[in-house]
Length: 71
Image (cartoon, rainbow, N blue to C red; front, side, top):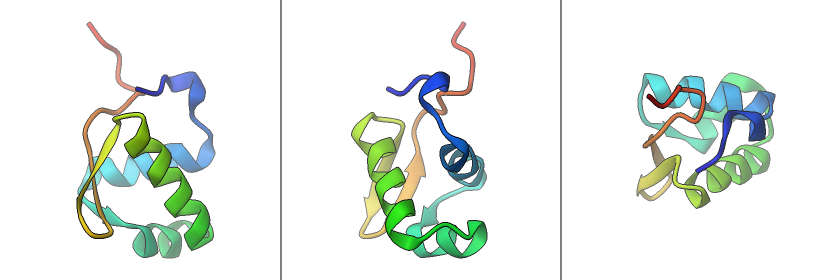
């Protein structure tokens, strides 16, 4: 899992969108202005670290937001 200090501005925006529901890379790219490849890379990183999952081809869902404090 990523920690909050591992996150950049793009990750923050991506996590905000994932907190609202499932997303696709093209949707995030359009909404944020980041390139599609960059969004795919950031989503891949979140999946790799277990913070998000790919629930279907191109569809991602949040598992754990690293910005939330653990009690």
